[in-house]
Length: 89
Image (tube, rainbow, N blue to C red):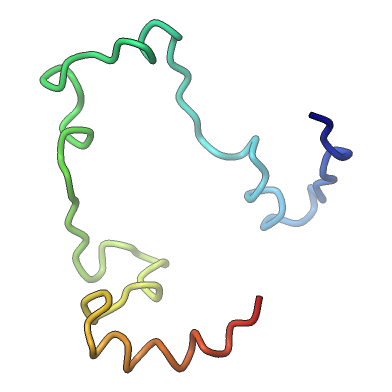
């Protein structure tokens, strides 16, 4: 499979630089660990929890992305459906 030319990153643009894959944190695991992951009791607590709780104010500067209505409830649809109707692909 052939890929196109690599994307050019403008290093003077902080947003472009932060969005580049090389700027994303990654954790390398060995192939053996990938095929045979450690037992659940040996994993960190965050990996064993099915959900996390985010309280108002926990997101800091990203707090503007918080939604105060429960996802897919009638009140959520009333609030967000008009906005989503204007998103054109």
